[in-house]
Length: 285
Length: 125
Image 1 (cartoon, rainbow over the protein chains, first blue to last red):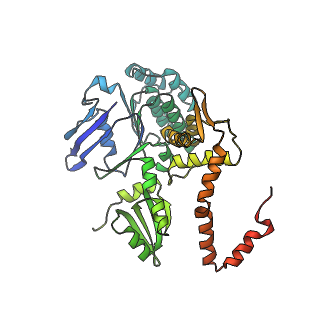
Image 2 (tube, each protein chain N blue to C red):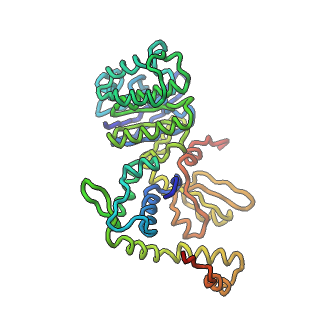
């Protein structure tokens, strides 16, 4: 399903959460939605899934606004950090309710995930630990098979092996039937290899949308004497630079080959680091 | 096989290099099947589109060929093509850094030659 975001804004009483962002997601891909706390990620996902209304601009999913739109909302599944389910429901009933709501619901997958994560079908949501509640969220998100599945930090309280299983199963599901998966996370190092495309929000604005492979190929960290590095980065877009004892490291847009030709020490920049440098609040200015 | 990939370099290149290494080292022979896109994706937990890009480039370079519905296989000439390609970048990738480091350590050209000629320089294994 095609997602078009046009000049989208969201203002709360005294705060701008999203400031005129525009982009589109055309293909069923795994997207990484990254940014620091308060960058506007959750607000964006809430609007995308039709749960809140924008203040300006619009989101169109296959040409329609998702707010209060039953036909669209059954194609979108948003799993949040917590409070996804009513406290008094049992695990079994949560699955039943969602199975009515999502036309592509995969009950077999849901049951095998419940089993894998050791969730008792008869336990009430309020008796589950944080990690178990997260596991239930992940189960619902994956089993929904919604053409647009959105995970907003879905694994609070889940240990590393359980998260690893989540990534594995998400990948398997994506391979057997590609769909749009938007994953918002702070644990970028764990999942960045799964992203086909990355979006970075900072203070309500979109600062980057790019294929991950292009990012890996076009951002470099170069080191050398201050003079050498300054010379190389002249006229280039510099993301960050730091100096120590007459040496300088600069993060710029450029290729490894280019830097090597200048005889500089060069490394690629992992997506996690790129996100940090792109969203660090500039002090003073 | 590497155990994990490096997030700071294009992943498709790393997948490509892995397959190339396996062919050059003789771990996979001409006519044999290489892992599929999905197998690579599952093994390394990487995006399938990325794995596919690495494999497709090898098809384009006639290192691999596709048999419909069966998978990807190593071509007859794959090893020769790869060795030729690696030879061309050998000077740049290995000799230049070696010379640079030698210079830093004030190792003379003669000393360097002598090291290359040492009997244990080649492991006849």
